[in-house]
Image 1 (cartoon, one colour):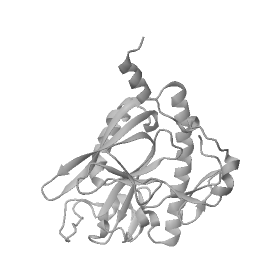
Image 2 (cartoon, rainbow, N blue to C red; image 1 turned 90 degrees about the vertical axis):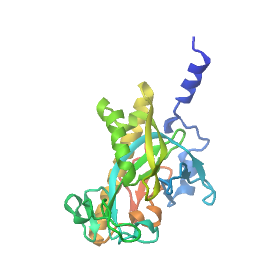
Image 3 (cartoon, rainbow, N blue to C red; image 1 turned 120 degrees about the vertical axis):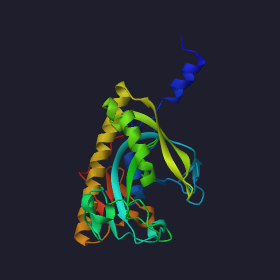
Image 4 (cartoon, rainbow, N blue to C red; image 1 turned 45 degrees about the vertical axis):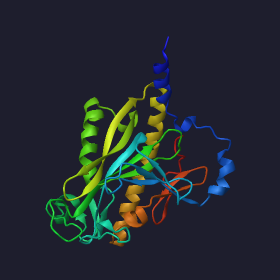
Length: 284
């Protein structure tokens, strides 16, 4: 017989997958309201100034929610990068000179293969005052798509360069060493304050809470595979569009907006244009 603590732990570990979310409305009920509507992933950034709370967009854009942690399933993650004019990376109004949607190929100036790009080498960075630094002029980042319990769509967490090593270390310990994909477990992401003497900033922390198994694992796998197919297609289309324009993609304009169109029948993703994918519904 389970005691109270064991029962509470099991309740805490009950993750509500999209397939389990009850709705009083069918796709037909929602199709006209959603038709042609551009909806974006909720984008969350690592806060500045050493803050230990995430700012999470809610129903009211003027009154976001705040949380010390984010819990969910990392259904997909990928590299990305951007190179701004000297000192302009801290200005949300400035468009980068060069961007990469996958951390491998850049579009803009200088563009080309990221691995051999002069701006992607250590020792090329500058601070707000134009002083040389030890880092890279190109800002290497990683985007995590996190599905939270009881929600249909993942949120997008952008990891800055200072949080890449903690994420890499966590991935190796929690997933690579056990030969498990990221979508097979529920994780918790927190924040740690770092003071290096020159400035204070926040770094992401990671913790595996528990693994899925059985039917839950099968359901989250179905969702993750379908979602990854759509995101892969989106990144391909963004890269093609940026190459054709021969200019930086709009990935980082207005907080790096990712848009999607959900007609109630199909899940699609848009950048500057609607990407239809294979017209398959997002698994739920």
